[in-house]
Image 1 (cartoon, rainbow, N blue to C red):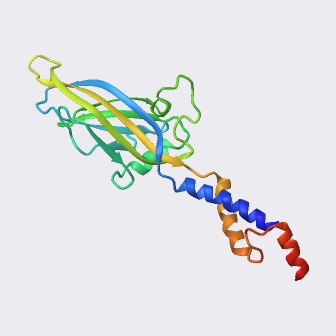
Image 2 (spheres, one colour):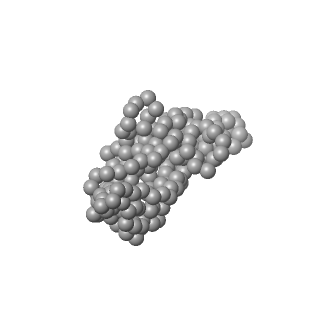
Image 3 (cartoon, rainbow, N blue to C red):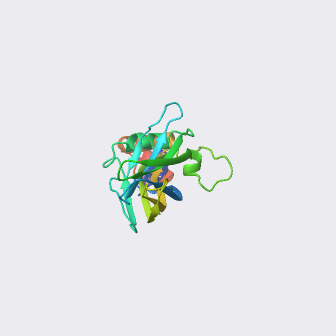
Length: 220
């Protein structure tokens, strides 16, 4: 009987290992189009960032910042990971804690000026949902990286006050969140059980049948 228990356990464990070793998948995405004016400024270049702000603290929170300023007509993609962003670990923790924290999607000009628009994580990770979502964020997953895709950036002359020449920027971008499910606690037990049985069960082969075992016992 143990042979069948070992066999079925190994099959389940194999599927769990395959799932945990799988490539990250797209968990959610967030798209934004907008315009933002700034004057006076002579440099039509901007960069974007995304911030998560815990509900129980004041901003700022962990922020993923595009390292480069971009100009007219630029399109690009950048991945934020634990390796290239010091804020990523804290950002990932907030993104998967099951709490409806706040987010801010920011834009920064070359001279340091900037603006931010935001809301709750439920709006960030469940952008097209019209009903409350549980959990409101990416709880139950491990966030591996965040990808910023900027589809278009365009500038036009603009001024807030006469004589203060500046620019209005129009942008179209998407943030994509990639990761994979965290194994259930029972899955970890199965992994340990499979290893234990594989080590302990040396008398009967995995493929043994009840008849084989019964015959072996009679002959021994």
